[in-house]
Amino acid sequence: MSIAARPNFDVERLRQALKGQLFTPEDDGYDDAHRLFTPVYDGVRPAAVAQVADASDIATVLTIARETGVELAIRSGGHSAAGHSTTDGGIVVDLRSLKTLEIDVDAMTAWADSGLTAAEYSNETNAVGLATGLGDTGSVGLGGITLGGGIGFLVRKHGMTIDSLLAAEVVTADGQVVRTDEESHPDLFWAIRGGGGNFGVATKFQLRLEELDRIVGGMMVLPATVDTIVGFIAEAEQAHEELSTIANVMSCPPLPFVPEELHGSLVIMALVAWCGDIDEGQKVADRFRQLAQPIADMVQEMPYPEIYGPEDEEYRPLAVARTLWADTFDSATAETILGYLEDSDAPMRVAQLRVLGGAMARVPNDATAFAHRDRKMMINVASFYEGPDDRQRRETWVSDFAKSLGNGDLTGYVGFLADEGQDRVRAAYPGGTWDRLRRVKAQYDADNLFRLNQNIPPE
Ligand SMILES: Cc1cc2nc3c(=O)[nH]c(=O)nc-3n(C[C@H](O)[C@H](O)[C@H](O)COP(=O)(O)OP(=O)(O)OC[C@H]3O[C@@H](n4cnc5c(N)ncnc54)[C@H](O)[C@@H]3O)c2cc1C
Image 1 (cartoon, protein in one colour):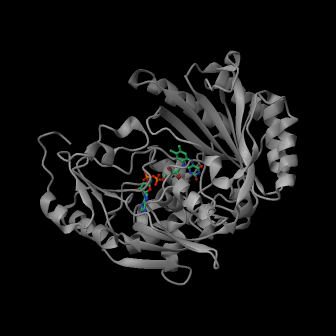
Image 2: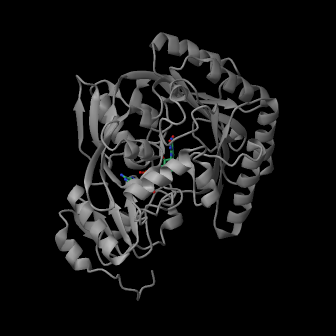
């Protein structure tokens, strides 16, 4: 928004109408209020950020957006790689002040506000020995990860986050507060499980909890060779579904616990999480240790939320990435990965390999709007870049890398999509999923009020 441009709605009236707080560019705290996880969108300037206090605050903002056409962005944890949770000149509905969590220990369920982060949710539920599977990063918002699907450390044992979703409260485009579950607004309930923020603002989720206090988990760093990569994937596939893994094949960052001469060399920086019997988990971890002498090994018994580790809010690298699904993995795949990583001189480059299956794959593809249940692996290739000068080069590298791994398959995970064009959004919803999503969109948001997202146009 240019400095001279004025919003076409009455900012002060909105401020008065809200129970929560409103930040405009003139207000202290505005910079923090509109900042996302990635620095790419720091220059995007919303006219106002509404830190809403409840569903009626949200409805107030939606009314203004409907009446004036001002662009609307919905923000939970702010991790959108596409910058969809901010807007140039529009209003951001910021859910971060909604953080209530009501745990029903006997029923093993929780009502969780969508402004909670994965770490906040997991720390609180761990205090009563319970957990729900979210993603791999503590600062990711419950709002975005749940609506996109949620693939994390419990995915093989307990499925995706949406497989634990029992109900949700959603403020729809017309300002109605709707409770949705299998019986009430079932189409909406189907659509929000993978269809992102297209259908309304989710204020809270009812999630199933699992008994889980401690895991065997943490980081293990192994040298990356064709044999160790193929061996890692084979072990991860064969292991009981109590095990979920994330293998980052990457140039080794300058970590204090890695000998200096190995900084920059190619390693498997693996995160493993075993959510079953502790002794059994130690034996499973040993199988990975036998692939090669670990360069670093922090896999141990720990409280489940410790898998998230500390995060530095000021560490905000620039990155480009592509996500894809894969069904086979062999030496040729590992050679391709090592070849691409060796050929790049980016300060950081990575192929992240997640073996899937288990509970996630037992849900039929058409049961939710996430329709890739039968894929064996998710791969995410990424490269850091330094600025506009090398961005295009890194972008081409990730795109070529992904193409050579995916054999032309365009489909990816909507949660990891950046601003990659409508073809990629379309491909994220294969089969009849796309058409059904468009019908539900027409029913709940015919005017596409919620369009700053991986957008599904109304039928
Ligand atoms: C470092 C990092 C690690 C990640 N790791 C994983 C992982 O392990 N597994 C995984 O599955 N995903 C992962 N993701 C992807 C992540 O789940 C998505 O980017 C998710 O959309 C982020 O949610 P958010 O609330 O933090 O983001 P936001 O930027 O706040 O929102 C993302 C999108 O969801 C919409 N939205 C958010 N909340 C709501 C709401 N309550 N109602 C309606 N719309 C809403 C926004 O408008 C936007 O379009 C990761 C992303 C990053 C950046």
